[in-house]
Length: 459
Image (tube, rainbow, N blue to C red; front, top):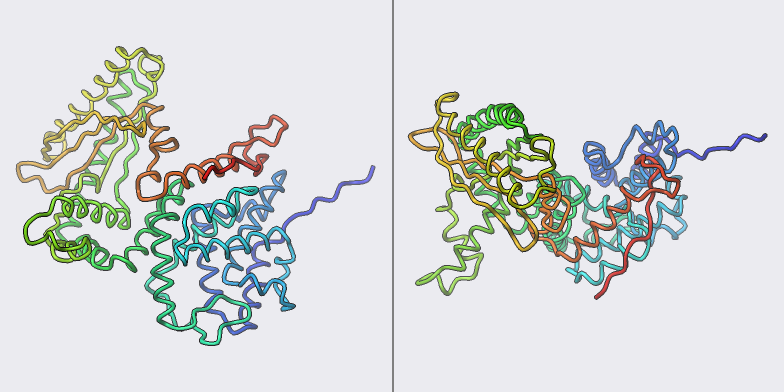
């Protein structure tokens, strides 16, 4: 019986070397360095899985997807017109699927840079399998606008036959501004949705550096302050200790519990929160400020903003699944309420006990939060008192179902950090189908799951 030949992707390093030679040949190594930086970030966050490309085993489909994704990242500065211009391209771009992803990336990029409405994105994202180009865009936006970017390497007054280049510094700054807007509105929420919060924070930070430089500078300056750093370090130590105590005491009381510390809020997300808080102050303005627009108001009053009033620079999440062997989410409302109140009681007692275990004293406010989006949780806002050298921190208590709704469902973070909710819902479905749709053989292994054609967008 003849043996079946398995078509495996090329080794990642071979493609990297091929693209480096290509960029060098066309005197554009700065573009190569940018593209390789995008690929490196993607590997750091497991968007591109080098080990799967190199050793696919039975996961050849997944290996080809990863390889195609890496190729698109390495190729993303190449213009669509160059693909059929007769110019000799790296061998990896002989793959029609890789070409298609590059074309999609360029089309998305064009939409970003002219501030296109949502309806123009949908055909690119929903008239076929979920595009890998979306992941390329997320990784790219997480490194674009970095302060070490040398614009001179990306400007060519006469254009370039192969690569996307700016025609002038003026055009470069304007298009970077448009990129920053689309990064804040679309690609940061999508990075959050796709399970990459650090990349979402990077995209927001870069967006604020371009479009809201006052807030960008203010937040960075405050966070570099020695006194603030000392307070944050102390709070992180307290939070880690509290997490250990909560895990032990809540579990000992009969709960199945997971305690997740979030010891550092990304600077980009702090910037976003500062602007939202300033928006609230602006909406309540009166007197001599009434004639100001929002940016003028922020410029005038930002110096008075107290970063220490943010309640979640450090946070803990307590997720309870069962109590006494019973799933809390399946209890009747009376028993469920009682179980949650018991868990809250243990959190309260452990915060109070910090006075004995860490010489730190906190007052706290408890809020039972229930929003129209479906989000539910108990928020405990702990505030330092009596000279405690700390910052405020937050403890969130959720059941397993409440946590799923907050992270994956309609109340997910990507829905409210600034993205378009309809766009987000479509992206969520596309992503869900990439990860969770079996290939029809009944296998539950992620290696065997494939892209499928998902949903239809209704204008």
